Image (cartoon, rainbow, N blue to C red; front, side):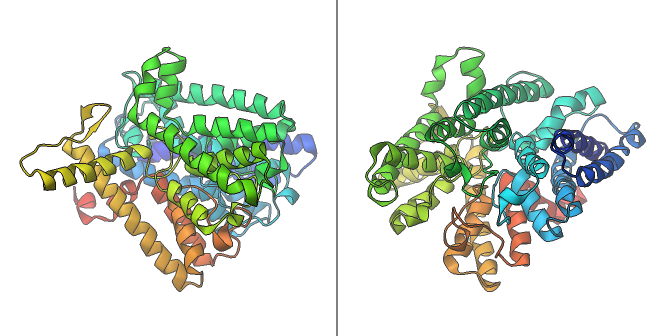
Length: 474
């Protein structure tokens, strides 16, 4: 059954490369690398007819294996155009493609603007299909191919709970992709009427809605107008919100979404840290220009908090305490059910309330304190899973930092690289800052960071469980 799923994914990748091929032909660029990549993807897709006798429903084990193998296959197939074009070697292509599909946005490219536009479009496309999840895209069509998608959705969609909008998983996936596409069109229009070319608008809208951060310019969003940066702030925040809430607001006109605990914390953190950052930027990079300070502060907080990773100025010029605040907001990231990375704000809120409950029990041992979200008590399974995920995330970042330092990176750069990779953000500090890139990271470090990106995107357990002997015995 997993062979069938991987064949579908490979076929989707082949189809998704068509726009880049058409762009190459239209601009007079060489389409051969993309066509070679499509041919290999199509070859893998031809395995599908060989699996017609496979059972039509995936088990939980199938779902975990399908996601893990699917991501490995996607990263390798997606990097083929870069290799065939002679632009990147295998390690750099693996890093760049993992960064694209996981919507991390870290890059090894030192001069983006000399790359063919067709390859840059494919690079942005990896963000776009990775944003909602290549496997969630597959779920939308798997029922038509006789493959159930519930177990894939459970393993793929980030967040402590897996809510469905409608009873059928495929219908949920189709609704989410419909919303995703509609908001993308609005973002393209906003960027275009803010002065971007149509091609730049498409590339940056793909990166914005995926909360990815790949740009077609070396200066990232700093190359574009103030209006484009304001629109980018708005759409990054929209992409970092739970798409279930978008559905309820836009399709059901449900005003009760504003009572959602996670949404309230999301907006509160954005405005509080954004205004703080504007105050910091005012004398440092904004030259005492109030509008510029507000734009820089809110833009960069939205970019880091939603794990998009766009840059409009070098916030490494800010005082170190402000840079540490930026690193801190990488950790929670944005909302569960969004395209963003991080551990998710809802988990940070749960951890804070677990801490509060523990303190209350110390003060009054006989008191029963329930941990609640949206006034509803959380199940022990959700609380246990939250603590386990946050603990495992901290361990993964610390262990990876040790390896990166051992391989020659300084401590600040190594820690921020590990953190930004796991949280799928993009820029860090030091040698991997917002105006730098990851080209100087040792090869082993690039492979480790690529693994961390996928680990963070799948929220650890989908991959870690594969290393448990019990998983293979049962």
